[in-house]
Length: 139
Image 1 (tube, rainbow, N blue to C red):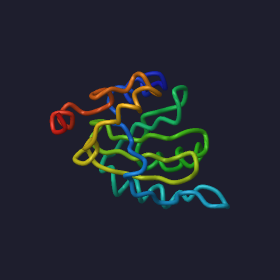
Image 2: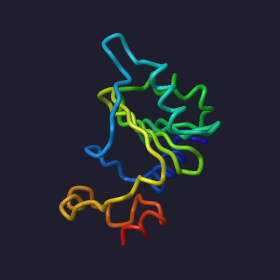
Image 3: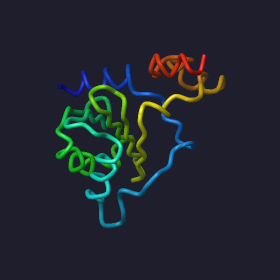
């Protein structure tokens, strides 16, 4: 899967990340990325053999979960790294500042973005970036 296709899928299926509502854990320290911490976070939140990883629109891949932690560790700091299983039902986000959070589909889309938020990111509205099932719960 090429980076362009990864970016297209992430834009279409990855839910909005409510940063303030997430529980974050540190996955990078002064000596560099903590690969075991990234690996355990992926194992805890994504129970799949393959994951889709996007660092930014020109860098992303479909990887075996065993290789994903090293790939993420090599690119921490280049952008907000988004990780999902192929079904887009389980997610992990790794911030550029070295913290990460994960969640499953069940609790991903419980609130709509505020009206003022749409002014800064015009492509975001009440249902873009959300799963149809989650949008039905909030409508």
